[in-house]
Structures are given as C-alpha cells and as structure tokens.
Image: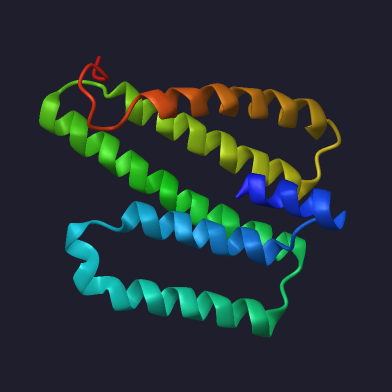
Length: 153
C-alpha cells in the first residue's frame, strides 16, 4: 500500500485518505485469515468488507479514528501470528525464526501507527529507524517463506 500512496502523492501532491489504508489493512487481514477451509466463510469476508466500506462512507472518520481501527486490525494480525507461532512450537518443540521475525515486524508496524496516533515529538528518528529495520525485514521475507525448512531453531 505504501508504493501506491507514494505514487499518489507524487502525482496529486496530496496525501491519500485514511480510508485507503483501512481498506488495505482489511484486505491484509483477509489474506492472512483466508485458507482452503475459508471458502465456506467467503460470504463473511465479503460482508465484512462491505460493512467496512459502508462504515467509512457513513461515519467520515477522522485520522485518529482511522488509525485506531488500523491498529485494531494490526493487533488481530499480530495475535494470528502469535497463535501460529505457539501452535508450531507446540507441534515441533522448536522456535520458528520466521514467525519470530514476522511478529517483530508486526510489532514495528503497530508501534509506528501508535506513535503517529499520539503525535510523539521525537517520532521522526524513530520512524526512520523502524523504516530501515522494516526494509531489511522485507528483504528477509522476500527470500524466506513460512514453509521453507531451516527456519526453526
């Protein structure tokens, strides 16, 4: 979602609306929760997306309300990853480095959103530091997959 927001800013010289980020966060959550067994629940995902769209159109959320919703969605994603980590550890008795890295990445996203929400004065340095860390984590995720062997410690 960030490349699209940057392109939008370069073309229109304006920031993209919070609704765009909310929709992208919902799609991210849907893609994480979607599996081969969820096809029978596909109507719930579609209904959830339609309700989100309706909510966004009716309420006309401000930035802080939108950020709170995005943080909530990111927390659901975090707990989904934590559950997968615990289940994998219980099954294999090994720490899966991929899940640990994924949880750390999700925590950085939540922390960045929270810092933006509260408007911390020294947020610029933290924002740049976490962005650099997320770039390196992005390289890691482009090389390693969840099902790749050798991630367990």
